[in-house]
Image (cartoon, rainbow, N blue to C red; front, top):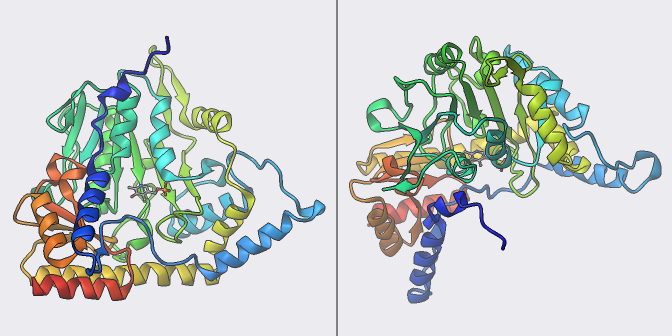
Length: 405
Ligand SMILES: *Cc1c(COP(=O)(O)O)cnc(C)c1O
């Protein structure tokens, strides 16, 4: 008899996106004349930058000739891409990351989900609430939690992100071993200052904990005072892993390329307290379970760092940020308290009612789809997330409809 990994049965079925789809479909059936505008999605809408497309075409042609054909590549990624990342994302900002500390992958979802495999069953884990669901669910699958009780898993330390802490939780009083952080944040759009990240790094160093820092939205930061990488914080090379992706900056959500930085200084400990290189462990795992990202896609990602690629990515993110500004200005002028939207493509809006009630209101009265905040965690109740990933035209039309409500 084939038996199941019962940890999977603990997973709270994620009704969020199927619930949204059900309500949207029902509305559309009853109102087939209405043009629905979807501001719920966390996916980009604009095409890839032309410089990436050119690189992709050229790389495909390379594969057609014997002397430039590429078979299996290095699992960690091609040196051309790892070096471009080290130079442009780190050295140029005064953060020290070497090319051989960068692991190219097919997504930050996979990397943030897989990384917990390296740690023992009995570690304590701190996870923000509200949160990108991958961090919680992968630890549930791995058996590091009890059951879900009223929206929270037993055994996890939840870091409440609320209005009172500006949606940036401080380190907990108790000791935790593994900490998930994401800034600019999905779903709240909040950003963390240098001082706030310094507190976390100091906490991790003091407790020999590890920070998993998800920087998927870093290219939306415009405020020069905000850190662009956890490695701009002193000591982070000894306690933090950083995840980045080409999904949201260059629109690679369907093309697939991301990377994880594991500094060689970081040690993790066995039951006798002896230190082991985290870099060596992740390298072992990555090479065993991953075949590398395809050559054409890595060439397209490399093109992000060319002069024209940089300009095009800047224009893309500027486009979404202008959408975000329009949304935030309108919602604020209507009296809603909003977070995010300045250095982030998400606007987190205090709805003044239950998340799903506001969702239904927007759908039924304005044919607009948002994401109910409670779907990201208990602290999201009373909020909705509006995404700036859409066309300018749709965003303006959506704001006009909300004004008219
Ligand atoms: C979109 C997103 C990512 C990127 O995921 P990919 O798998 O690289 O597409 C990572 N973290 C968060 C919080 C995200 O919203």
